[in-house]
Image (tube, rainbow, N blue to C red; front, top):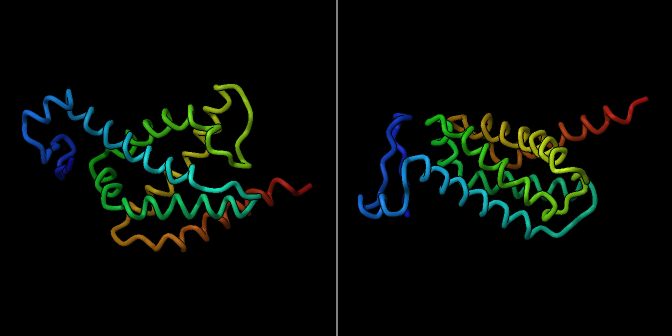
Amino acid sequence: MGVRLNRSPSTISYELSRKTFYHSFKNKEAVINYLCDQLFDQYFEQLLQQKPQVGEMMLKTTFDIFLNFWWQKRDLIQLLIRQGLFDHMNEIWQQKAIPRYQQFAAPWHVQGTPNQVNYVMAFQLGGFTNILRVWLGQDQPEPPEQIKDLMLLAAQQLADSLNTN
């Protein structure tokens, strides 16, 4: 099913027959929700294929998966940003990520109450989604490898700042 968003934020057109559209979706938001659900599910499937690793290697692999997945979806992400729908995608991502938090075994995940996990996910996803917004919001974004190096540097500097006495 193809979905094409027009330039105007209030106008969304669908490459579906009218009957199919009304049968499948109640409104425009339902289409966007469906699209965001599909994106997140595809991304999460790629994360789950990752083999558990120790420390920095796990982080590098996770960054590779993240950046390469969204790089391939950059036209759609740029469209969501231009249409003012990127934050809506983030809300859906946050809602779907929390129940799946423990399925993806990462050394930086914390054990905690659902409320604590919600805060941790908000912190982590906020960084990731803001990278997407800044990176893919450009007309000519840098290649994923260049962004990965910056993300690793930022993570290392954060870790180093916690280790000073």
